[in-house]
Amino acid sequence: MTEKIILKKYANRRLYDTEKSAYITLEQVSRLIRDGRQVCVIDARTSEDVTAFILAQVIVEEAKNKKVLLPAPFLHLVIQYREDVLAEFFEKYLEITIRNYLLYKSAFDESFRKWLDVGMELSSMASKSMGAKPPWGSLFDLFSDVEKGAGAKAPEVPEG
Image (cartoon, rainbow, N blue to C red; front, side):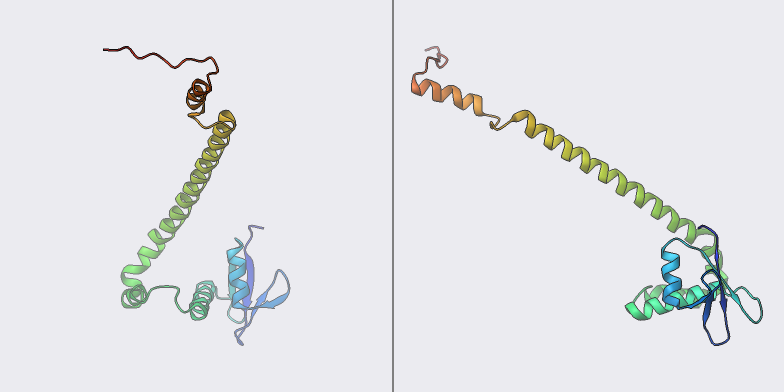
């Protein structure tokens, strides 16, 4: 399932999924990508690869539905500098940065989950080893036995 799904874009702006032999929406394209699939969009008339254009449309539609996807100052920079500065940044650094962020986030989340599991195990072990008695129970038992005259003697304190 790691193969790219080939979509054909027709003049009427409809997208045709060649894998399922059905027309799909931009929302369905977004869902495919979120599910880990790669898409390749080919213009049906010119055979030109229009994948980037369609993916940009997906982002715009999501931004329109959710009101904000990318902050306005960032979008101003993208429009202002277009190919000059940002093309190199996007090609070389942005993808790597996002992939590394996701990798480190996943590793941190896994480590944190393991630490929580260890903490829960230690808590469970501590409650089992201590039983029903509080940690100072034996000390208080000693004094209650002395008060009851149960034969245990309180330690003598030297005078002086």
